[in-house]
Amino acid sequence: MVESKFSNKPIDRIQIVHGEITKQVVDAIVNAANKKLLGGGGVDGAIHRAAGSQLLEECRQLHGCGVGQAKITKGYDLPAKWVIHTVGPVWQGGNLQEDRLLATCYRNSLALAEQYPVKTIAFPAISTGVYGFPLERAARIAVTEVMQFMETNNAISQAIFVCFSEAAYHCYLDTVSAIA
Image (tube, rainbow, N blue to C red; front, top):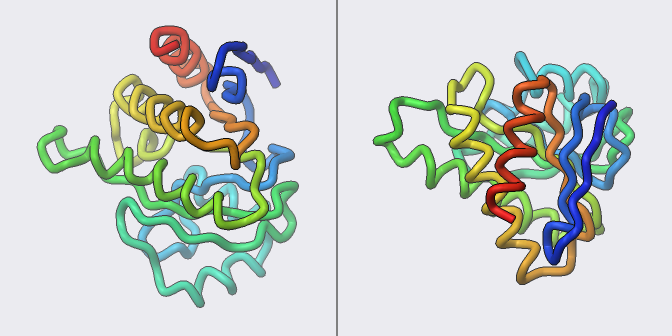
């Protein structure tokens, strides 16, 4: 695992990590889920496999999740105590409120985390896999939303962007540097 930490006002509480979200030792990880919350491919499938069958059982009781919304479950066999499930938008060219919906995923995930004993939270690059959201655009939205939250809120002591690919890792590093 490669990591980089920045030090400046809210930025000192933001970290970029190249690794797997299922291995993060944090209070909560965010799942880039599908609307049914029943597992699938990518991040969602990896989280469900790592957490074990109890996660699927609890997710069934949540009756799905809308785009931009967030719901929380226990982490079960994950190092994280909680999983915050959020459904990102499918990229359709950028004219169907995709930016707003993606920003809402981050805002709602952080607002939900604030209601639980979550001090550390890890995010994947929501919507950038099979949902096709352009990586640079998604990174800018993600970093902006988390930084805005950190500027006005001390409930979360650390937010980590976990990048599975080398390309995403460098994109997030560049984005944080540019915004900071």
